[in-house]
Image (cartoon, rainbow, N blue to C red; front, side):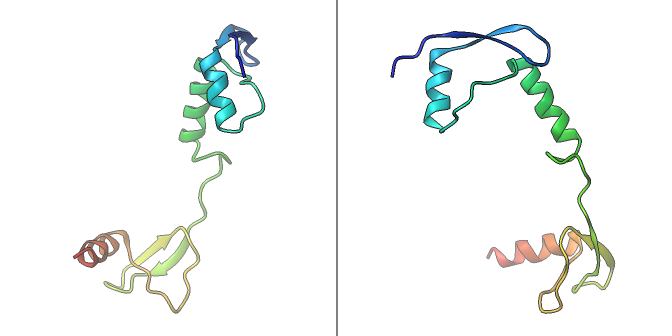
Length: 102
């Protein structure tokens, strides 16, 4: 399929930007069916904003209280602990992971 460069108006800032033939081929290879709506600058700014807000949802991650199975220290983890699996604080988790590598 032959692609030609397109000029698109950014929905954020209104600037015109080129959607090149090679970019169109890349989008098609990934299965994307829509053209980009934002210029590269606005896309990057939006991506940075999502990153600083803690992800796409913008909400903070729910944390659950737990007691470290190694040292007994109170800690918080980003998943709901189950009694059949040990939970570690970040320090002990790092030690356990390193010892399991060898």
